[in-house]
Image 1 (cartoon, helix red, strand yellow):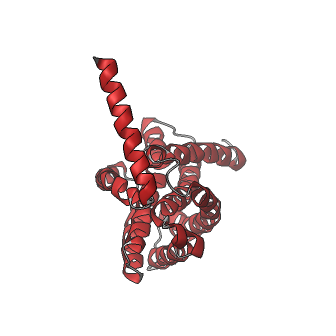
Image 2 (cartoon, helix red, strand yellow):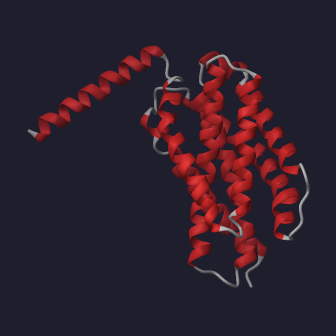
Amino acid sequence: MASDLWLSQVAIVISLVGMSLGWRGVMTKYSGFYDLTTAWSMMFWGILVGGLYGSLGDLFLLTVYIEGKFLPYSNLIICLGISVAVHLFLRRKKVRRTGSQPTTGWALGLAVGGMISLFLIFRLLQLYQDNIGIELVVTIILVALISPRAHALIFCRHGYGMLMGKRWSIVLRTFFWTTLLLTALYSTVYRMDVWIFIIPPVLLAEKRAHDWVWAAVPRPARRRLRRIWSDASRAKAREEE
């Protein structure tokens, strides 16, 4: 039987890999054309807030669920708290001045989702350490990949909504999706089939994320970015000829 210290180290490494992979794609495509400094600083705050969020979720939801008990309304209170916290972070003067709510939200979501995956992976390893099989490995991989990215998508959409002038209505939207996501992620401890309800919405939101992040790119940077893409496309066409 492995010690909790060893299991926690494994969970930390896996969750960090998931967070780093979550940065790829949308954020790397537009790298250099949005407020990267604010996004990186938000990763730090996301780890702190996500640590508290993950700890509360682990204490009042996950361990209770594993023990076969249920605390009514706990998930609603915890998820409402994180939704309000996200809104307050994205309302900061520096974020609003640069119009970087979507990209800042993505960075914040990656960190928060990474902390949720850390606690969940630790509990999975702790629960099934004497019965490690393909289902456990697949579940851990999916948790590490999906949790950071799904939270990033939700918080990015929150930032986009704020950029479009929405205020507290976007908090309710984020509250709804984080509640569903957290409940679904914790349900995968015993039910792998829950993933079929998690993955499709994430893939659909991924397609929209480019529009959300594009809104955070300043107009002069958009023109430069279009020229870069156009030059790259012409260069590729010449190489193929």
